[in-house]
Image 1: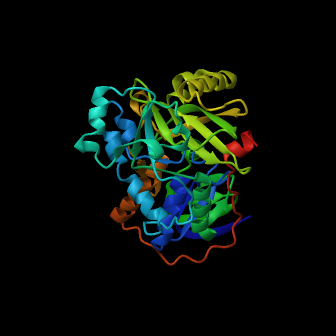
Image 2: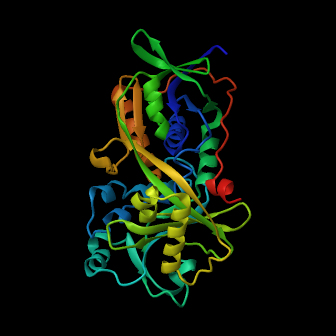
Image 3: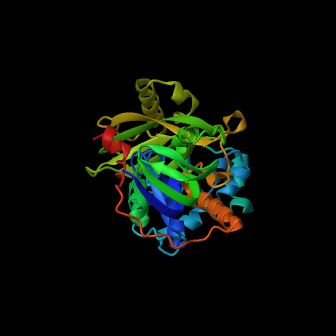
Length: 391
């Protein structure tokens, strides 16, 4: 097919970063086209746990850090959007939990207890007891401490559905993506034979960005992958739990989120230290065995006899960092009309959009009178991994 489309902004990658940016731009009057090679949200976005972090996870050594402060304002911005009064109207997106929790199976070190009670985190961390505990921890056998975080957990499938609705006619399914140049200048992309010309091109395709850069003949910005080996558990005995379990180090021993399956049962999605270095090295059977042992140790009152298990490998795609450390903020690099970036976390999608909009404002990129888009083939919405692996 040969046709020419003119738009203000051409975005590649319909994960949370591309979808959020697309919705922000359209609300500001820009004409956009959002290209997706596979399914909407089917990469890193749908494999996330849906936690809108406020930074407490990054302060488990007892002090605020650059990472904890960079993300501190994200829960407020997401809450405003979920209420329909923020930078986007995300009313209708399912909120799984109005809070995330920290739980310790035993005593918490004195310095961490003092930190949780300090002015630095007042309003972010509050201890809870009794009926305020998450349902899965409301057992007589539970003897630990629980702290409520001023964070939230969203249902990612419903978020993707809403952001796809906000995308309207701008979504385009496209497999073959090639550079469109005027001399040495990139002026757009050719997508399955369609020429799409734009004032700016934004690559936000997560792990797919490296391949897109290679297709454009570029090697920068460099990308890193930090792998995870997540575990899913599904069964009638599981009750809602959204919490980091504190261990002895700076990372949560295990992070549990709970998600609704189509058959009405709950699915526990397990990350944290369990899913990192040692977990990545394990084969699926060994990783499931490790998860069973960890859950039985931390939550011995939970009946696991009818629980089914599966694992999922996830590549966190990010800008390359020295020593493969985790970036604190969303990232954006610019090369003339091309902008390339990663939000680095689901919660930082608004920060990624902010960075793109600041670049547009600096360069004087404004909405123009582009013609209406033709009827474009649409990518499908991705399905939650637990529906595929634990039907």
